[in-house]
Length: 495
Image 1 (tube, one colour):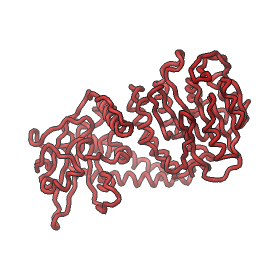
Image 2: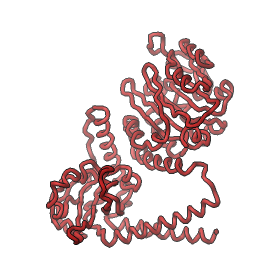
Image 3: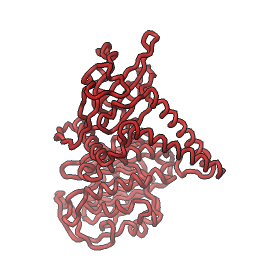
């Protein structure tokens, strides 16, 4: 078995080298433009998110300046011009219809140029017209070829924005034509980032060979992973594992693309989270509303005799907790809040009148008076792990809600792999967090801390983010995390 593994590994290794070389030789090479590319990708993602904000929130975002563009060819073969009235509802009109677009290597000056703020693409197909195969080429920018844009799930899955690529796709899926479309034909798409790079790729020859290499690579990789599966078993069921990988592949470029601009991550958190929601449809998600906010919960899929709910930050509103108790009366409630108004929590569970944060100490804390006006006082705070171990005395928390006016960052930083929570064998299935900004003078760099938190959450592979929400005035975001790693959490809420 070891000998076979070694040979498969070597075959995969050499196939990967050859494929990478083929990619780089077809259009200028993405590695040479690495830094320039990631600056460009950041601007492209900003544009996409701002457009979605405008659609979803009825807002008019400011126009974002583009520091970098790349010149790409913009053309279609003449055959498309003949049927343009039928195609114009799908494609954007190119700069020119010309059979010069068909050349494997377009000569300078023969085809119009367009400045692209994204990446260059070239599409190739051979439709059968009256029994004759006719070559058709389409060249342009990622965001100027289709009126509705390419299927972003495919763009992310095949890493168009991360490297040059060439492969065939089903038009029905790539163009998101809808289930009523019966056309199962394919179209070859090559993507690249370099000056005029979409004018010197030859899909009929190099694409076929490249596709064959990729097929061999995937087959060998499948064999290797299949053999490896006899040795080890994953802790995550296949369905959840696939969804987790999709979430990570979608979320990772978004939070790392903006690695130099945490303000953008904060402002676009809702959109990023919505775009990367692969788990939501597999859970029974329900909103629980307080007077001025909404918490989210995944309802259990199986019967359970005992559940644990912890609320950090109560004030005088337990509407959502009361609703949760009605839905799941077997839930035991534990709440902590230093304000006098929080005594109302005794109606549903155990109440502790102190704050909970990252350390046990007397700390400056923002509270609210009876008229809901903010006031600051020095109050007792207890370390989160100490609170769970000493006062809650339960290692499995099914629901955790955190709204502690700035103290949440210290708790959030304990959630990561090998963090204080994990080291104390405390498991949490669902977490609602209200992440505040500019609440207390001593709490700084909130946007940077959120960025780092999100990046680490993605790399941990333990929680996924759902139902993100931005609140503009006052400025905070609502984070909903679900544990997709722990067996009980998966059994109750996902599988």
